[in-house]
Length: 230
Image 1 (tube, rainbow, N blue to C red):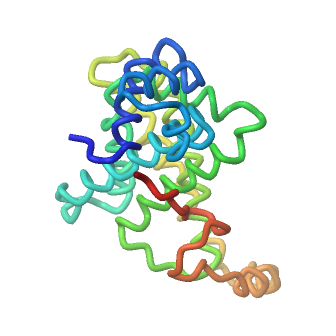
Image 2: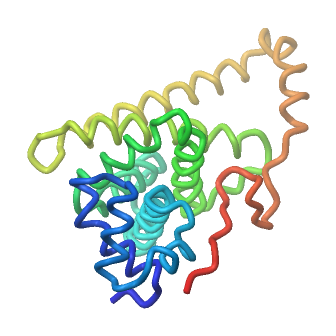
């Protein structure tokens, strides 16, 4: 059972989102359902529906993490572990229309940056769960690539009517397969003596880029600071 005002409001909103989206109407309806004033509701969701949509996304990320923790990932290949993370993230969504409304909201130009940050946060959660230890430019490239894979898979999933979303999981496997083939090609190029002089300068520049420190900062990708909740 939800034990904070934010969780109660978010749960109450879910029945309204398919009809009214992550809007002020949904925000007001959720506040009414919970029995609090709009002013009190805004103490935890200052921007109303937009903050609710972001909270819903992050809660689903945590549900995905819980599923990854409980799964037997040790027996899987690395690419299968990544695919499992994306699949778990979609499987925790109980109502496809709720996610669709969120995608629509964060596709708006004024919300696009925040939407990209949320997707980046999902990718970051997956890599952290898989024990990513990269400390250089690879930290960023891994999350950027996985953000693209996740985003395209979400769009495919939203329109997928196949039994058990089999078409989506096949699409996901193809996308990850493409990434793995690219990484293999990149390794082969780097191992070729003829290319080493050409790569020395960009490698030196990229080598100066370090991953964010372990300390969370709202100014770094993949991290956020939660507003205090009542």
